[in-house]
Image (tube, rainbow, N blue to C red):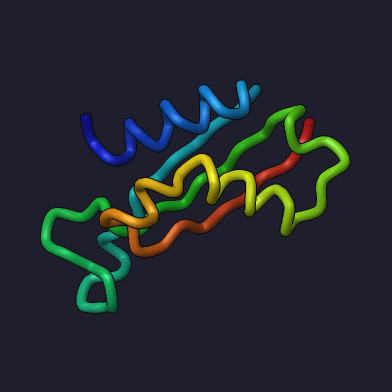
Length: 86
């Protein structure tokens, strides 16, 4: 399973989103810290879920980071997060 697919699966399981987009943006970071040949080091995730209702931006980012802790500690160098309730 690719890292992108794992991220999608974990975010779906954790938040039951009504909308989820995960994009590998590693190619935009070639030569930067954390980048490696083949990508899967830098991602952008946009998640819309009722799980974020009433939460601050910091709280939603912490929730996403917690759901993806394993990936963030094992190869994912950067994760841009856009998380909101419907």
